[in-house]
Image (cartoon, rainbow over all chains, first blue to last red; front, side):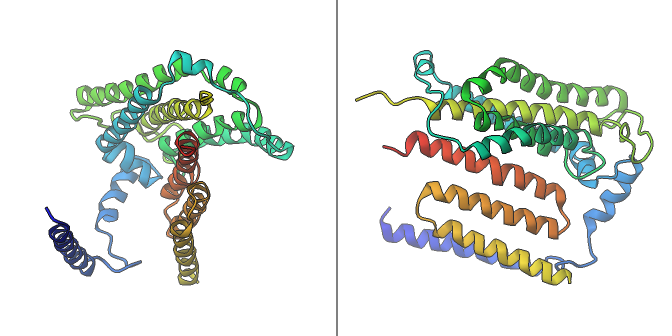
Length: 244
Length: 78
């Protein structure tokens, strides 16, 4: 295909997309308007299952199947990174632990923030069904907070306190247990990922049935998965180039 | 009042987004990308979507710039 033909083809495609977008935007509900078809359906359902955080109710109960798909995407990304970026045995010996200089103030801030961040991550995961947040957000906070050890301490310190093997097992186990929880719902409640646990009192920590269980599972999966993923990137970044 | 907050947040996102595109060096771009995500998180809070704001803050402002920087460190010198 010549350049001219390709340009015309691209322009035709772009025009088609533009027409579709404009027609869609013209029929969208007004910004900030009172019309919310989805809210009117989701809000009563979430309240009936004693879940104050509507978003978590959608993620881990009403549309928990979608979260299973997203969880599988994270797992696939981790497996892909592991197979592509895992440093080989001789590369691992060339990993240079410390290069450059970290200001003492940054180190101090890192050490102060480390426990706070880890606590915040656990809090966001555990209270996913009550307050904004949930397994995914809390898991990412946990995984990134753990890496303050690298900024404040050193790579050997991080490597010692970061059991990659166990993170891999935890990632796989949490992914599998999510499916097991779904099958439990199928057996006990008649539908895959049905909310079969007792709903409890509205607003208390142990309420909303399976929502906090699934949130914690996702939290473990995302935290462990991101630690493994970041470890591969960090390891590759620290390999000393061969002297040529 | 709400409109003013929204307009300010939207303006921040627009300026930060332009800054990301206008930054030529990928290393610096990782930092402007992080700032852009921060502005986006503020906009999500203004739109009363704290769940999405948390995700954006954690992934967009921390993990993605970190991965970009590590990748540039590995491949950028060639």
